[in-house]
Image (cartoon, rainbow, N blue to C red; front, side, top):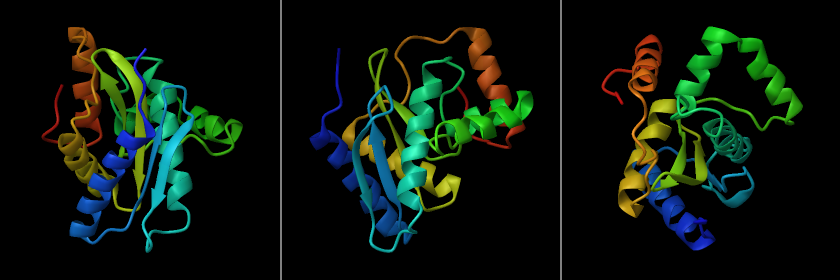
Length: 173
């Protein structure tokens, strides 16, 4: 079983902070293991006081729901899925987990091959800004946010439909 190590999490966090500084958007970044336990967290000096909790919640949510279905490729897809089916459940889950559930952009799983080894959450910018930082940092440190296992055609179709309903253009599986 592969594991994310704190040192490599710090490299990812440094890359996110590099991009955040370039964009002028102070953020907090959290990385959790596949079970949702915190590995690393950092808050930039000017980031809002609630951003560390939000970053942890985003990472925790991705870790929790990624294991449920390959349909949950990121926080935006989780949010859209719940919006369509049962928005009250998402609120109830947040209450049941003491606020650890937050479906939003800026969070995704981390894969090694087809094994999920963790997840991250970024908070402080808009969902789009958080996602831009994540894309930059993943590329810089070589993290994959998708399994190498090929999703079924029906899963791809479903995710692409969710992206379209959420108004996310330019992203397809």
